[in-house]
Image 1 (cartoon, rainbow, N blue to C red):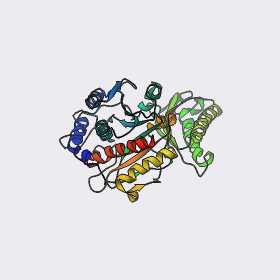
Image 2 (image 1 turned 90 degrees about the vertical axis):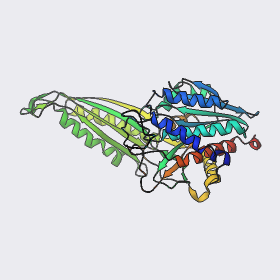
Image 3 (image 1 turned 90 degrees about the horizontal axis):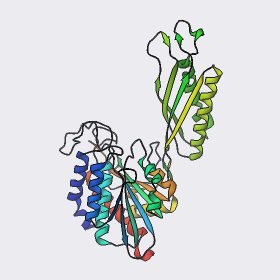
Image 4 (image 1 turned 180 degrees about the vertical axis):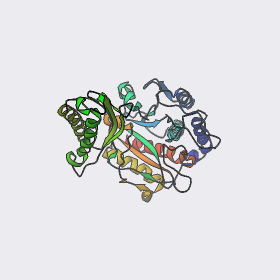
Amino acid sequence: MKILPEIKEMHAELTEWRHRIHKHPETAFEEYKTSDFVAEKLESFGIEVHRGLGKTGVVGTLKQGSGNRAIGLRADMDALDLQELNEFDHRSQIDGKMHGCGHDGHTVMLLGAAKHLAATKNFDGTVRFIFQPAEENVAGGRVMISDGLFEKFPVDSVYGMHNMPGHQVGTFAVRKGPIMASADFFEARIIGNGGHGAFPHLATDPVVIASEIVLAWQNIVSRNTDPLQSAVVTVAQINGGHTGNVIPADVTLKGTTRAFDPNVQDMIENRMRQIAVGIAEAHGAKAEFTYDRRYAPTINTSDETEEAIAAAVELVGDAAVNKDVTPVMGAEDFSWMLRERPGCYIMIANGSGEGSCHVHNPNYDFNDEILPLGANYWVRLTERILGKEAN
């Protein structure tokens, strides 16, 4: 790995920052101490700081030279509602909350890059360091967009990065086009007519109707989706009734859907609503259906992905960069930024072997070994795109 000596020398400092953030996890839109820490560090580097987008978001702006190009580099800051089971010294000090997805590492890698770029200024243009809250569950990236992120802080392209457990340190993975799926959430309330369990003919049973709807929804993937496309319809909750001999008046279904293509996303929503309403009406009941498009598909654009690949290859070599990684059905709210600007979302390996586990696991921990590599990736990407010779 070709990591700059100046960034290697920052390793202990970056690790200290990461452990501090890990000890004090904060979840969606409550990242007050984390954003304070980020803002203080950026200001100490001489970077202009703006706060408040997406409630607790931080945007640092670093300008150099006369170039008129601008790029955005984004890291997420929030933790999970999860009880940590690790026993090391930097484990979470907050019950029920932990950095179980590595956002503490993402934040520190971008801070390390900001420190180096502010000191060396080996570029010509503008870098926006975007520290985003609330990636988990509530799509803080969408909130930053609606708060005017790119109107207030214009960029030509935007880039994101996430750690990837289970893969050898010193490798990256990326692809052009869809790399992560949408994540939409639905709720259907089936309203029937309750009654005694011994006299079902006197009731309109929402349990039976809801069961028929659940099964019919599965045909959306098998019969309405192009076999060359991918889609998921998952009913994760069925709630209704309080005892075994009473037919309830209503039943609620909740779950999630996934797709890589926005057209498939549209089709899923439309078919789910048609099926729920139609089956309910056929049985003399009523269906109320709501659908929340919380995460768009994460779709990398071609030219920007080539830049990301080139930066990674310069650091770790061509063989260590998977340029056509298999997309996953997980979702990422960086997708909302990619809907507004071209860009690329890349994966950096977090390590494999004994002791490693996937994200959202109470035993997970970000691998401090990759902090300099991630910081150097951001630096190399910036210097490539905003290279003085390119302006």
